Length: 347
Ligand code: NAP
Ligand code: ZN
Image (cartoon, rainbow, N blue to C red):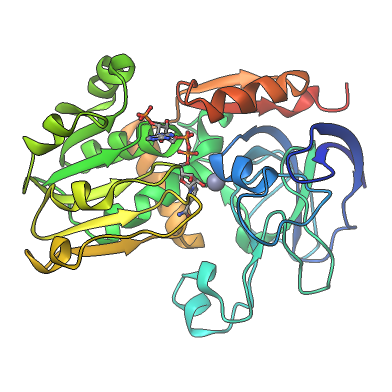
C-alpha cells in the first residue's frame, strides 16, 4: 500500500514529502491508519546525525497512535477500527531469553526499531511521520478508552521510557524522586512518579516551567542552572531521573543522591558521562541507564495512565510546520510534546 510520508534525505537536511510503499499484510500483521505521531527528541538526534548509523532517507516517528485499518488472517487481538499505538519496536526474535522475559529491546538477534532499522527480511523500516504503517501484532498496543489518541501517542516512547525505570528502581511511593529536564519525557515522569506516590521535585533551567511542574504533581522545583539551588538539596533524593538531551555536570547531580541512591540516565546526548570516582564511592551511589521498555510493560504503562488520568500535554502541528516544530523542540520551547496531525501529510 502507498502512503504519504515526511522524510529527510541527508543528516541535517530539511523534510520533504515522499510516498512510501508499506508491505502487503502478512498473516500476523496489523495496518495502523495513523492519527497522531509524537516528535520525540530522539527523532531530532537521529535526523541531525547526532548518533551513529543514521540511514537516509529517513522517515522518523515512534510515538504512533491511530486506528486499525486492516488485519492479517491470524491476528486475534485487534479488529478494524480498534484504537492502537506503536512505539519504538516493531519486531524481535521472540525466542531469546530477553524476548521471553519481556525485554524485547535487548533481543540478542537485534530488536527491529520502527525506523532507521532493518527488518529480519532485510527491508528498511520507516516510521510514523506517515499516514499508515504495517506492524506485527505483538508490537501493536491497545489504547484504553480513557485516553485520547493525541495525548496517548507520546506515551508509546516517552511514557514507557520513564515508567520503566520508575518500576525498575521502585517502589517509589513515599520516596524522594527528582526529575531533571521538564520536556516530553520529564513532564510524564513527574506525573507518573507523583501518581505512584513519590515526593517529586522537578529540576528545570529557567523559571518558566515552575508553575507547570507543580500542576504536573511536583512538590518542589529547583533551578538546574543555579549551583546554590542544587547545593541546598545535597543527599536529598533516592532516585534521580535525568531526561536532559544535553550533557549534565554529573558530579553535581550525584551529590543530590542519598547514600545508596541511583541516578538513571535516560537522556542520550553525544559524549561521555564522566564523574569523579568519589562522587560514587562516597555513599555507594549508582549511575544507571534505561532504554525504553518492553512490550508487556508498554501495555501495563498504558493501563496505569488510563487509571490515573495521565496523558501527555500536546501541541498539535501540521506537516507544513514541521521545521518550526523541530526548532522549538531544539530550543526547549514546547509544552510538552508536539504531535503531528498525520492527516496533513501529503495534503
Ligand atoms: P525534550 O522534550 O526536548 O526535553 C528535554 C528537556 O531537557 C528540555 O525540555 C529541557 O528541560 C532540558 N534541556 C534541554 N537542553 C538542555 C540543556 N542544554 N541543558 C540543560 N537542560 C536542557 O526531549 P525528550 O523527548 O524528553 O527527550 C529527552 C532525551 O531523552 C533525549 O536525549 C532523547 O533522545 C532521550 N530519549 C531516550 C530514550 C531512552 O530509551 N533512553 C527514549 C526516548 C528519548 P528544562 O527546560 O526543564 O530545563
Ligand atoms: Zn522516542
